[in-house]
Image: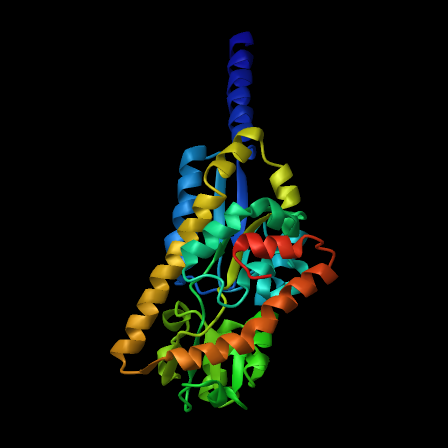
Length: 334
């Protein structure tokens, strides 16, 4: 009887031990508003989470929620991370510029020529930019290739050609640029561009070429203008602070080891690769590719100068006393 009781106690102990081991595993929710076929999920988020889960040996797992499953609004991705709707969110600071006055300095028009250049500049100055993210754990922050101007019916070869055009913009910076050029900015998330172009709600759009394959823009645009003083877009990957605080020291070390600058550069590289693919699609489809001549470029550059000054003034107005210094360190002319 004693042997039977001892055996039962041993089995119970094993069961409890197994339950305790399972209970210690942590699953993190990763959310974004893009399609599950979007290049960021396929080339960055899936390999990143799979690598982390493998390194954690079952102690840490991830579940990706694409297509706005946890929050339909592209604008709300930052909020979903802050409030714990998700543990990790991928989104754009430009959708809620008031929260990111320092980050907005990184999207000054004409500042960078490539996604890698933008991302390196961000991380070279991350201590000055990081206060924008103090309410969350910043995992990655990167820039895209510079935006291009795409239109349906009107080829843009000079500043005068923009006058009166309704142009989709993603953020206040792009809106300020379009206004400076004489156009009318129409703020829309990328997911609404196709329908707006197809129905004539907008005449054109401001976006980096990575958006072409993601949103089938080759079907609704006919003209593409290159050589403009345009901004890159900034993107973040952030983690809910309570979720971060709840990790073990080992789990935190694991996440830190594969986040930061390198994850940001990997993300930027994905955007650059997709932008190249986007331009190839446009060229293969026979779209009109306009490269501005020097005189036209100078017109656009001159008209755009006040936008960079306004970015610094806006940041100052939101309490960023060293905004001019940050802009200068990033490569700005202020």
